[in-house]
Image (cartoon, rainbow, N blue to C red; front, side):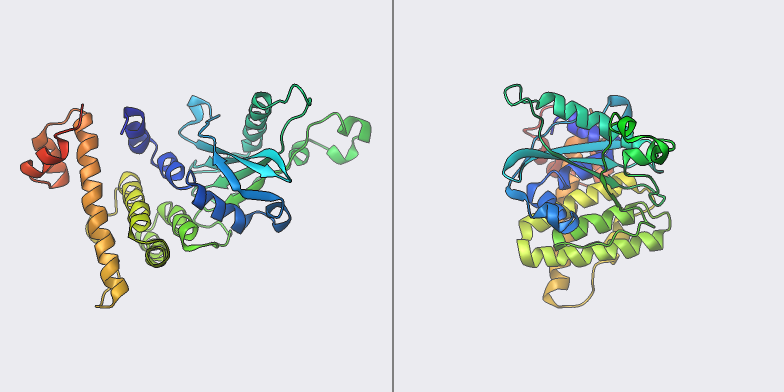
Length: 309
């Protein structure tokens, strides 16, 4: 893990979780198929969906926004889907201006000088704050007295509309799609809950989907999503303990309950190993890392033997 990745986990846990979930093609595809209007989905060739691994967010806004750019064929032509993830504790009424700025940057980069054209871009906002999202999603609606202006003037003004999805605790956006995307969306809603009981309820919804993921996708994918989520929880919620998360796992002797406990145990071990590596790269001693993770010296030496500071 590079230092910049470690910094993102520690300083920007919302950013890290979003990038490591929605940055996966299968998860992004599931979200798009589940939430975009059907008439748009019908002209997308989602088999061509490709993460461009490009960021447009200003450095000063990194604590509040994250973005992803996917290339995809739209109606047979190269196009893009731009997802802006807003994780402020409150919504920003001027987010639409940020979106317009980033769309302009994408168009500038992908201007076809031969055809004198720019590609279609589908702008999406995923909101993840504490309060319900209440903003205007069309630019013309922001222009004062737009309805009273003559058409000739209106035609001189830029206009666009974006799709906004609200996953704040009180957001009314329904949770839908496959278990893979539902697990992530339930966690987004739960993590912002100030009340521990409300968080626990959302976490239980997450666990329900995790068990379905285990049946559908297998243990490797299940463990991947679970570990990413454990890291997210522990870097975001100081009031949630490992014991409380483990107690939430279903009781009983049935296969799925047993599998759930295995997932937590393996996720806990893998999470501790990654934490140990991260702390070692930060310069902590083996004794200090042992105190933080609960791992003994011999185990730590084995984990860290090939890790460079």
